[in-house]
Length: 348
Image 1 (cartoon, rainbow, N blue to C red):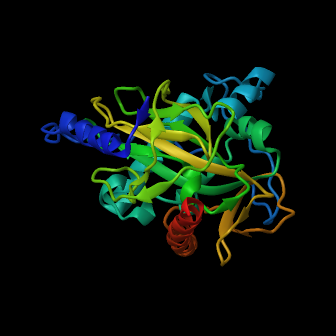
Image 2 (cartoon, one colour):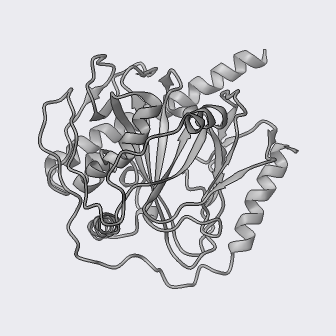
């Protein structure tokens, strides 16, 4: 059915009402586990990337995940595909240990920290930089966007136990400022992302994806700090819950309409969003943007490339992260204005 904007807003408040009174439960953050971080990569010059050592195959198959023709067609028709195995249990626990070190350094949980510490962590944290180059993720992504792969953004998507944090219906493409629309997001679950825990819900594009009109509504408890929300009537019929087991990942296209409900589970829902683009994609910002080469080569030069961090929280990594984040935030503000101008013109 078509859901008008007012009704969508009411559903946000209903989500929040259902979770009120449950905030006094103890924080159930992951404790230290002392496992080594993911393997690092050999240093390579900017503009080139190569294969990484595969992790131990005790729980995850070693071979590349080959997509079937039906899966590729499904992705292009619907705009999403899931689930895929990514991390062994050792790798998953190493990532959670890395997250705990990060939060100790921050002095607070990531969701309570300044937005800059939630964004572009692969420029700051070696274990996250390893994750965005994980072969089990890239092997699938490559079959959808080609062998020359850049990371546009990385983001922590964390919902505390029994929290009202949610995401309204939106599209990733809206304020990215990228052309053409070839970006794909790998959403990696470090803990179970069940329906109860507030997994992503997606709507099929039915073979006809388009950019929809959004507004940054600054909604209370939005996991997207600007609260970007589709503000035109939306057909919610047939929404699919992309439930993921810890260690697996999903894929969704940049025009895929998606949201997530609050976490009503007793565990912390920890997800890592990695936005991949083929090297031919270009930014529309009136200034240079940065990206990270995950695989292949960059023969286009549309972005300033940067190296992976080698030491957590060192001065070089912090300076790189600050530069990338500041330019990303500036681009976001620019794209909000461009989006308004675009749809103002279309409504005339």
